[in-house]
Length: 449
Ligand SMILES: Cc1cc2nc3c(=O)[nH]c(=O)nc-3n(C[C@H](O)[C@H](O)[C@H](O)COP(=O)(O)OP(=O)(O)OC[C@H]3O[C@@H](n4cnc5c(N)ncnc54)[C@H](O)[C@@H]3O)c2cc1C
Image 1 (spheres, rainbow, N blue to C red):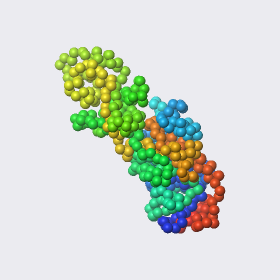
Image 2: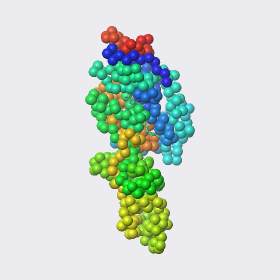
Image 3: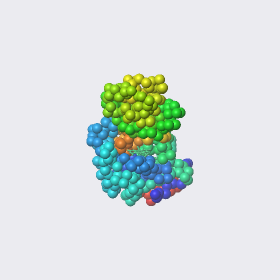
Image 4: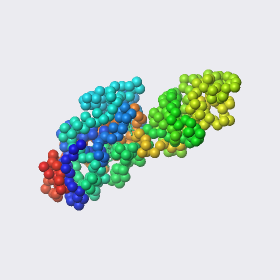
């Protein structure tokens, strides 16, 4: 990845100035903002803390790169829960179909899987990212990797640390697309949050989303069943799962429960734990088998068979499900068929806490959407500074909804930044030592042609 020269580290010299757009953060949201702004004719410089862009996007490719989802709107919008109205406005400008067309424009055809999830045909992220970065570079977008933004200085200049030391820059407009707080080793570490808060931007703390939960398993249960899948099961959790519950798959882990069914419920579960100290998830371990039938089956004489064998024969239970019954009922509760049947249909699991932010798939929290102009995603407190992607305070389940909203918000922010910059008076070249050049390089703390 090539970078044009920027000023050598010289924190005391006047800041360099970019007349166009500085995009900070090279994930899907930032790269989409860069693409749209460049297409609108702006000079665009992308600053990325890591040695290459799109690292989290590449990791998403390990799971097949679930780019988006085939479900129609407005059901699609409802996945964004409390923020569906705001995200729907972003999707009006760039929705799932537009995302698939965009990928096709890069030579990456997609398909809708049986669950409605949309993937590239080869289920890989690297070819898509490679082609995208090449196209961006060819269009004139400049990349500056290993440039870590560290906030604004007292004069409002962007501060960066680089391998060569500090750097200060003014830019015509800025798109912040720094990601959330999960998997910090890939670059998005959430360290920006206090800098924004201190500069008056309304934020909420980053919290785990799409996460597993700790359950206080006994050592015996953990030792025997960690890693075992539970599929299918139906989860019940208050009004969030409706009368019929939510069917899906989860996995017993060393620490508790994980898997797509738990991820889908992670927002209400996390909020309940914050409010009440713990949350009780009810699992139907035998979906499709009515309780009356179970009671009859389990009341049949056991003979000399072990309880596990009896449960396997009568109710089709495997070892992990029998283990869960033991874990919840203890030895004393296993003899009564009515108790057994009731527990199998509504096994109560106490979830103690969500897994720590660094290990979960995505984060909730970040810049409050109330801190932004909804039409442009420009920060109210910082004219000319726009924000996009997971650093904004919305959340969604897995299924392609995360990437779709990141692309859509990047699209909106990039387009709005281009429009905003077009309305600004041309920068003065007479004051101080800043020199404005639309397409120059930068040297000695100044831009040059
Ligand atoms: C294991 C895993 C699998 C996933 N799979 C999927 C999936 O299949 N489908 C889906 O929809 N979503 C998936 N996601 C979520 C999705 O990858 C993210 O929501 C998305 O990448 C967020 O995009 P973003 O552009 O907002 O931020 P990011 O992709 O996190 O990019 C932010 C960029 O900003 C840079 N940055 C951060 N701080 C600074 C700084 N101070 N200065 C300069 N640069 C900085 C970072 O290095 C990073 O490159 C997955 C996530 C994980 C962890």
